[in-house]
Length: 260
Image (cartoon, rainbow, N blue to C red; front, side):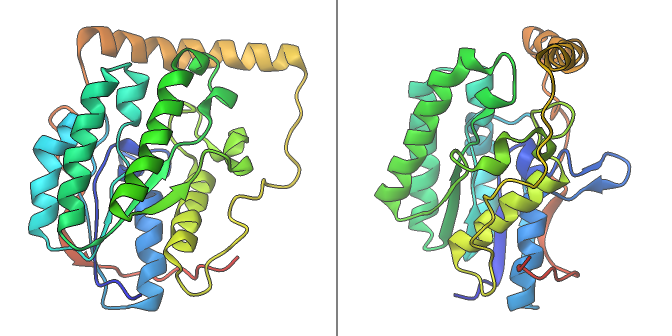
């Protein structure tokens, strides 16, 4: 199928954090997927309404209606991970997800949603939220079945348990990770030339001594986890006051081949 109007909603991953910076701008998996689609249809229009730090409730309030008003024929809607990390009420999150996904399904667009990578393997403190992550992933599978969505299964992908797929904060994908997410989405959508081996781990995965890993984890906790806890306690979001980077449908300039 050829897509002509692609809209992405969500949080920092879909905004593209970890793949660029605030000065030069962020690219991210959704932008990379748009590049791949533009190779098939150079007339593609693309909008990205995702904003870092946003929860499912934020997406329901701030992103859903603007996305639908753009009349997309393809919608990417990875939602819920910030709710898991923040340990929000998952019953409420499920209700919000069901409302959002029902509305998206009613639009007639193809809707793309993921399961989330096994961050327990990459983030030292993630085991505390593992039950929430597993539940969210099952919710994604259930809603994909219920609404006929395209599901991108990232949870079991070996490439995402390699720290090279993650930026230094381990919360956002690296350029490699964003590229693999885009490749996974392209394959799930059946884009011509898409890579069936997108989940294969990178060669030469580094093996570190246990002491080295513990020191690395300790540095990560000081540099990234502690500031995140402080922001959470204060009720501060990285997305406060930020607007989407690409709020209107615009042409996609570049074309990145999907193979290789």
